[in-house]
Image (cartoon, rainbow, N blue to C red; front, side):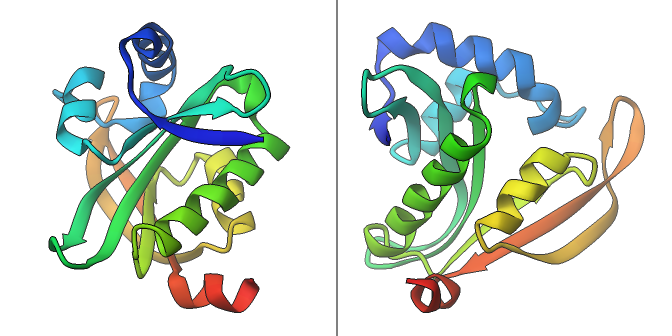
Length: 164
């Protein structure tokens, strides 16, 4: 249904369009990064999400703020963005597959997501994927010139192993 591939030049226009459209849900007022900067900073942990059937562009996902070393990764923060045509069942399925790869192939013990409390669509996807709210950071950043809370959701490998 979905697959994750490294960034290639032919995806950059679609990536850039999607990032610009939804960056208000991904970034705060302090963001000075560009999509190219994010891709370079997070490589090799930035993937394009494609449909398995016809390789249609569906979105992107990346890991950052990784804790660990060359021998073992411990935790990472996930950010993902899907084209609206792929919201719903497709994004739920992709989340399940990607998280499985995080725990089995990358060896992560914990995956976390930092979101704005009003981002109900992502919050629902996180909860359906097994994430639990770990913290709420009051007035953590500025968004549109106003103090903004952030919520942290986490999923531990032990939860994934129990759900197999």
